[in-house]
Length: 397
View 1 (cartoon, one colour):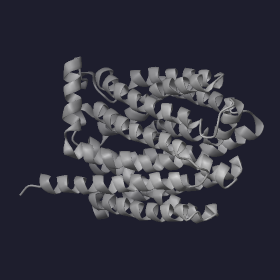
View 2 (tube, helix red, strand yellow; view 1 turned 45 degrees about the horizontal axis):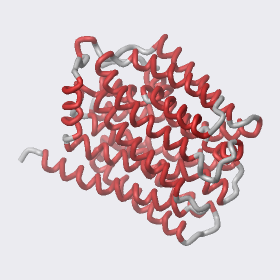
View 3 (cartoon, one colour; view 1 turned 135 degrees about the horizontal axis):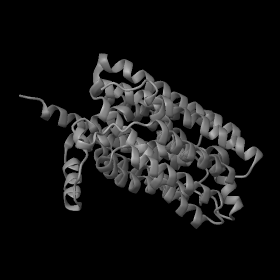
């Protein structure tokens, strides 16, 4: 199906709500804790509620997108996200901030699950991987710019201003969807399922081996990625005493490597195929995470010693994320919204657990972060082994 050249830009702009809302306020963790009189690591709770909100919200948004089309849930979701961020900016305590982060995630999840469904509406196979990689290129600017912007905001204003900026971004997304986004799901293709049939549809998707193995690869990749995202402020700012601005630069260098790899991905797919690319990225991820864990447990006192391994770990996700997403949705064209929502729920539930664990076990060193990244890498390799077994079993004899 043909689509306007600007559509991937708009989809990437919408999907960027996720990394912007996650990454921009990471440098503010120490400031939030100091402002609200909290102990070290307490701000991780707001990251946990954000991830859980994304998991719950995506499951709901996928059903809405398959029943009412792609456009209406996005309009409502972006409005809820923006308004909840206004509340975050005015929050007087940790409980209020955490609950409003959960609400913001419920609304923001629409902009994360529905663009993937739109990609599946428009394309499939290598064309879908190319479009997904283009979307990642656009949304990839967010993790590069967001921490730097967050650090700059902290230099001139309080942490509350970060949430005012998120609110403004959300209202802009609301306007863009209202004015420009077409609905790619035709009325005759929309699902009109009751509660019982909806639950059965979830079961059908979750028991399909291709979906669950690809989704598990993406989920464990995000487990490792968000161990870094959640743990890096404590490790780099508190542990290695980097300024928020310098932290943002280090964080951005990792995001740049992720983007570079995501753009190499569609160029290597025609030559090597998604199966070999996924296998190679999983094993490189495991090797680099193992090296990182070794350096962390040896407590090497230089942040640049752990940086190369972190960059390689993040770069591997530039191959794993788009290919695992396309593989998970490949057999679910008629209910791409529901399948995309289930994939998002699995991924962000796992990522939320990682974010909580890194806060609980943080000790001012890189050990907790590195160990959780290694667990994520092991999970990716195990999921890949089962994925490849399914591929072999599915081939005609």
